[in-house]
Amino acid sequence: MVVFSGDLDKVLAAFVIATGAASMGDSVTMFFTFWGLNALRRGGSQAGGKTFLDRMFGMMMPNGASALKLSNLNMGGMGTALMKHVMHSKNVDSLPDLMAQARQMGVKIVACSMSMGVMGLKREELIDGIELGGVAAFLGESDDAGMTLFI
Amino acid sequence: MVVFSGDLDKVLAAFVIATGAASMGDSVTMFFTFWGLNALRRGGSQAGGKTFLDRMFGMMMPNGASALKLSNLNMGGMGTALMKHVMHSKNVDSLPDLMAQARQMGVKIVACSMSMGVMGLKREELIDGIELGGVAAFLGESDDAGMTLFI
Amino acid sequence: MVVFSGDLDKVLAAFVIATGAASMGDSVTMFFTFWGLNALRRGGSQAGGKTFLDRMFGMMMPNGASALKLSNLNMGGMGTALMKHVMHSKNVDSLPDLMAQARQMGVKIVACSMSMGVMGLKREELIDGIELGGVAAFLGESDDAGMTLFI
Image 1 (cartoon, rainbow over the protein chains, first blue to last red):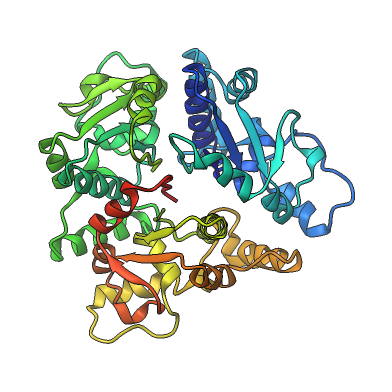
Image 2: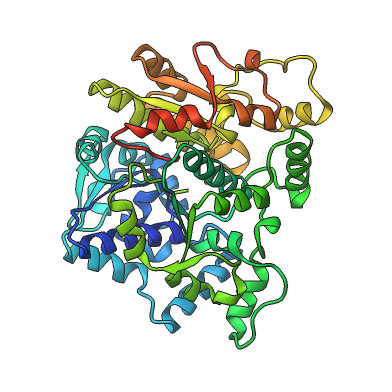
């Protein structure tokens, strides 16, 4: 599974599918690239030693799973807040909850090293328990996968 | 096939692929989730007994296949209207036509029950001839599928 | 691989995966449809003999790989320009470079003939070295593919 998008709704869908598949005994690898990397950011301040442009990109992109926004009806953040409220009131797991479950279930999370370079993200800005890898790693995994999705 | 998007162009692509595959004798299941559910709405007024927020979400989202919009060049609806006009004048099937064909061809259409809950959509607000199912249903289908797409 | 999107970042991802897979010895077919076709446009002026609407769509859509925009943070073109600058300064291949590599590596590029009709694009407006095909062609290819992605 490639997670390219950093939209809250799409990343949620990715983790619902991933945890669902893992609970059915499938082995799951999620390869986060480009905007999807924002879901793996740790939150808090950026690492030192970044160029001005890297720092600027880092400031403009959502910093971590709790900062992602809906792809539709975001309405300046209001739609996203409402959706989180509705999910909570209906006892649907939040994204951080699903991510924790995925990791407990052994879902492998890989951050695309090339995209990290382009977007100026450093390893220490991402959450723990993930691997770094390139396209070759992803292609190696997906070669014998029963299903691959681009989200 | 997962249909996550509710953009007219993407849902069109999904049904073009689905009817194409069905006409080649493949068995096809389309799993509609999140914004994609809007393509399955019946149109008309909402069901009774919904909370204020559910009703509000229902009002803000497109109500049925004819109400979907392009992901690009929508231009306040003008681009979408133009695209429909161009498709009609070039004898390309409209989305409602393709959906009817898909159902005649035996394409299985499943609405994601979890997303319906989150978005406050009720069974009676969706068109006839579809099933409800969870992620497990989708994963069960896709386990022995030759191809899975996330649209 | 279906390339539906005409966003710079997604088309880049598609070609990174395609060239990666080709370099590992896989045979790769990219099927460009809808907005994705814009990546295959030749640039320059439009072909003659188009209807007014076709010409207008042609004017409003990006004309070629160098004209594509980011799906996020485009900011009136400034974000896209910055991203290209950053990629260049970090020695990451640009989209036109990747496309040339893909073709040298034997990646097969197919333009969806139905979408070309809908969007009013003519064969001579697209770059050389590509084939035209319909959905059946795509489904034929993907039937025995190890992996299919919808980007």
